[in-house]
Image 1 (cartoon, rainbow, N blue to C red):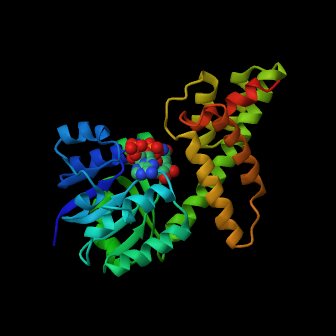
Image 2: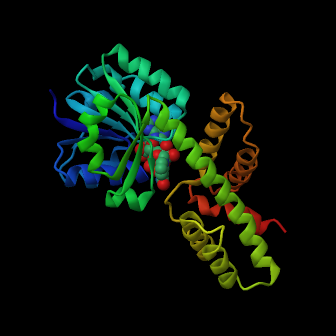
Length: 290
Ligand code: NAP
């Protein structure tokens, strides 16, 4: 059996995850569309593959950490895609936040090569990726998860097995639906505070200590009040998560009206040029809107 671990995608999350795989001593092969982002990892001992197929060729575990369904589809199934070189010894792990519909399709494609797919999206952000404190929400076969667990453990504080393949993707969208709506409503609430004549610091400390308080409210309000939009979670990714959540909930005949409204605020921020900033910058168009 091959021993490499391959990671496809070295963005905000993938680069931190890759660094922890290296630290744990796994022979690591990395692929990123923009190869320049791999340099620090190569300097630290990773091998750079020029295509996803090359990355997966000798890997027992292949992890994908990409933007969305389209990026994942391209990297797994495109020309020189990773599926070209996987076999019945390979475990595929899709950790990107993607739609359960794409996970179902990818699982079928993997099975044509005899390979098992685990969907293992994560909670946690840049800091948790860098410090190996992510939580994996896993769907898929128990035996495959047992084999992959040491790899996942090196990047995480917990691995939660939710059921058959697709379960992790569903849970992740429910999680991010609640996050997206909260960030959007916090943006509105904070602009209201700023215009109300209340002391913003006092108002926020009441909210943080009270019933609306949450880890997200604490972290995001700090970024909004200091206008610090260095990226932990790209704003444009939240429009994608809310859209996938709306589509998935509709499968269960649930109409996510609050997600639709929140997505409107994030899309307005993308239109104003904040798509490449942290999602906390969703507040900026609201501040301008007088
Ligand atoms: P990111 O920094 O934007 O990185 C995106 C990655 O996808 C990069 O490697 C990028 O390659 C690649 N990519 C994008 N489009 C591509 C395409 N068409 N073909 C090939 N590669 C493509 O995103 P991230 O924050 O690491 O997030 C990765 C995934 O995890 C997303 O699904 C996100 O929703 C999810 N997530 C993020 C967080 C967070 O806090 N950031 C937390 C949990 C889950 P290039 O470098 O070449 O652009």
